[in-house]
Image 1: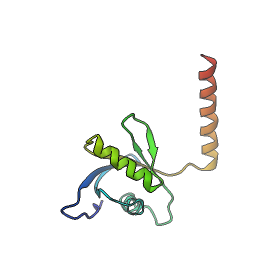
Image 2: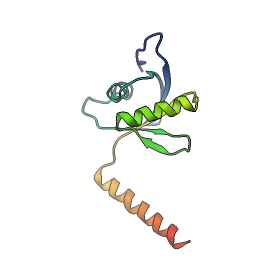
Image 3: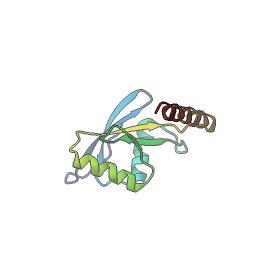
Image 4: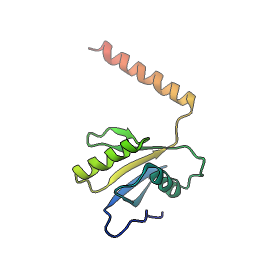
Length: 119
């Protein structure tokens, strides 16, 4: 697991990368770009160059938040700094195939309908 190279005067972010039942630690430059984060994750998780994957972090309310844009990565880092978190936890996953996604949506819709009926 190669750490992201950072300059001595740059602030580092300790990142805990969770993937496939393993937890890996790396250090990221505070002003990392989404492209560099993708490269780092590919290297750590040993993904091929064409492997599609998702990146999520867990916010202070415990909600998973997808990082698919630079703005979302910047917000994750900003909240990491504001909350003075020890580390930024990142969950890496493989995207669902279309059938799995449809099944998930059907189950979620059913849960919501059941919840509304009980009100």
